[in-house]
Length: 573
Image 1 (cartoon, rainbow, N blue to C red):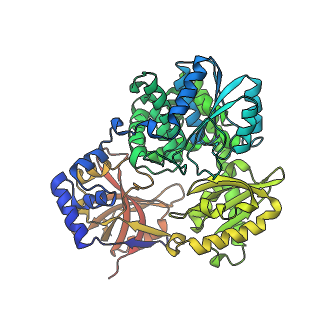
Image 2: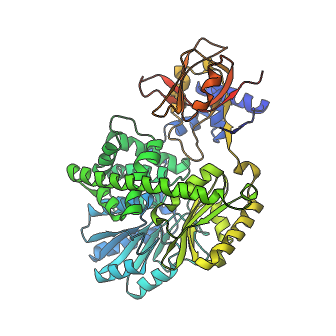
Image 3: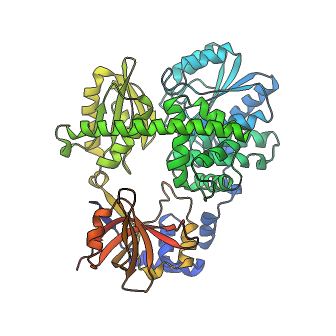
């Protein structure tokens, strides 16, 4: 791999501060440096970070419009009005709908839920959805993970006597929809202390406020935290602050007593004997929930997530697993086609962005293909297909670059757009694709930093094998859950050698199973280097090399560590 390694040695001041914190906490200075980088400067703060408590969650009534939202919900229940819970078809939207519906259904029966069809209705609040609500006598719609831009659709609903409560976390426009209440910490007039909640997280805060107002004990909300953890991990929102508290306890719930629907997905993924992490949600649980909305309809994901009977849930989970297999095949084919298009783009080496359009592509998978392109080419990518007479698509970004702002810069060419820093959706007239491509490239070129467009591994600390003690590993595990703003630390060790027993493994002999020593200790460290078998020949020459890696639990030998090697380079003699 041609990664550039980036390591900033700590200053004298940082070293002293880390030593002082180490004295106070009993944690290694190496890990204390990582705590300081996360803004943690005292033993009390470290304790709070390592053991987040549910009583640290913010008062939900600090959120603008929360009192109004709760009052309108109470009123609807008092009047026995029909309520509809409406949400987006992705993981965040479907978990949010499942959470609010499951909670309210315990106290109120005149309630329904609705997920728009990706193909017939598209993203967000649809006229078809409003019409369906009207036909079924709905008077209040709680919309989750979308709605902040649905000005016309919500005005149309209002004409029909339907009120809206919006629970969203996407960036609003200057004009807000005419909803009764808008719960969104990204509002310009926001009063809430944390603005990185997922859509499902906003739904949870609404239910927390409703519970407080109606004298319902908080412990009745805790079984729903597994859904919040799944949404936070899948929607790639920061896992610090309030999200850390929610995810920490959500993972506890997921591992000890998951809801019936999630338990069925866990079984289907083969995770039932394992401690589930954020990574398992991102790579296994989330994609299966998402596959429902990509291939069929997101409503099936909600049906599974609210299911009470385990055998019925298992049947639904197996169906969703089939959608995921179909999604993988589509994803593979489309990524190959996309790579061929990109390879033939003029002046690719000088471009800072990628915009590609193919009207035959499957709308449900273009977001994944955009993600793949950003991983391969290290550039913001927009992938477009044709839906009716519009080019519709998804954008994904590279670390540190706000793709939403780049799209907003081209807003006069667009019919619709929405999203956040790293992911966005958009649609435009087909004839505007060419001009959009030009203008998007101009914006990216002017705003992206050179280091954001190359494969850089940021190293957190240089250590020796003797530093990796059982206590070091136990303290490192307390940094979980990892995610944006609290990434898994990457370590570097110089001058390591093959112990003589490293070997190439894998179905296609693509990985290396390593047994390594360094010259500072007698510890033999186990490691795995995925997809790096090309390095095996060098390793076997007995010459020294440098590695950068994350420290993982050895899944085959409990309590032992295994290094997951990110990159290997010959040592500088």
